[in-house]
Amino acid sequence: MSSVSTTLDGRYAFEYQVGLWSYGTVQVLRDRESRALSICKVVPKAQLKSTDGVLATLKKLRGLQHEHTSPITAVQEDQHNLYILSTKTDGGDIADWLDRVEEGFCIHENSCANYMRQMLSAFTYCHAHQVFHGDLSPISIMLSSKMPDAVVKIGDFGIAQILDKQMMATKMMSGYMPPEMRCGQHLCSGAAQDMWSIGAVAHALLVGQPPVNNEWGTRGIFRGSFEEAWSERSLEARDFVARLLLPADERPTAAQMLNHPWLRSAAISEVTSKTSGGTSQEAQMTVLCYMLAVLLIPVMVPHCDFEHLRVAFIQMDKDNDGFIPRSAVHSILRKRCVLEEAVTTALNICDVGKTGVMDLCTAACADLISREFFASGPTSQPLSCPLRISDLVPRMLKKFFEKYGEQKQAPATVEGIEMRIRSAVAQDMESYTSVRYDEIIACLPEETHINEKLLSEYLSASSGAGTPLMPRAMRSLRAAEGPSCGVEGLDDLVFSFFQSCGFGSVGFKRHVKAGGC
Image: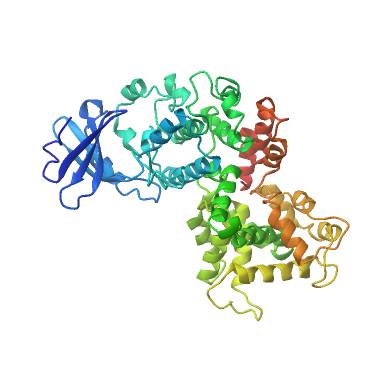
């Protein structure tokens, strides 16, 4: 098509043809008044499962608004076609990046992880609204610029639901389609289908191509034709992809993968890289406050208080994946803390990976900080606003040594911490979250008195070891990475990581029922 349809001609002028997508053609149009460019995807009506209610469905999708989605801006039709318009981005799409990979260009892991983090944020939001993509591929993933730090925008959410599923199955035989769809076993779209496609995109960005038909699952993707390329990527990145390319009933939710340590590390690195000298005092203080909160919960939070929080969290966790949106945590905490800014600031601090979704451990940390440190000052009055993390750190350190010091506000020892941390709340934290207090304490220096300086240094450098920020098996992955650890040892490590994070099919269900992550 070299011109715009007469249906659109009154408002839009044809600019150029892009090419084909799964169900039709793609062109760029220019608004005659605003001069803004739009992507127009043409869908032949012959490919629709039914024309009834299609326009209403597409117009409903226009209300799907998220910072990492590219929503539908207009929908038109004529006798033969639907015309679905969305905003054109300046950076093209991920397919352009893949063309560069094929030419020998290598995408830095941090850039890839940040793309994945933004994508998963959009999928978490859309899946929560029961809207699934159903046809994710690089052409649907648009970028705000051609720079590595571009903002990701996912297009075409929900469009697949209006199309004929049988026809889709014959047209979508690409490396981004889940294997069960290729085999014709499951023709309905859903979260599991989207998660496999995300893994396939990550696979392509990291090694240049999506997984081939007979190389999927934990073993195939690392031992087939891509083995050499994968050997140059971190075990954390491989773990991330392996988790997504499992059979449909074993794939995690978008919220679970959004909290994968590979993405958390990239988020912290992004904050750090934006500060002069390559270090970020605020990023270090954020990890320190999170770790201090985890250590203070057993000695400051009454057991009944923690239990009430846990029950409220479970009630909000509608899909039982161990994570709820930050807005839901905010709603819970506002019923427990009267000061709005205390809750908001505490959530900002405790969402270390800036994911927008939170587990029970993160909610408990934010609850402690908001109530005990921001909403209750030295005279039991709220601290004056604005509330800052620089004000929080010394108060939390002081409270730590009040609770764990050999005497009030005196230096502490590992032995003393081990003795005082034993409580019913500590047991519940270990039962219902991924916290392991012995691993946290193992990061501290033994046979010496621990003062504020030592405690701050060791906790900040721990990368969250013993908490959901850094599960035990991920520490094993990092320790094993190097020349002595090839892909041969990955399967056992990956399985161990799934189990420690509650991702295993049996272990995860047990944790979910208990309200943990």
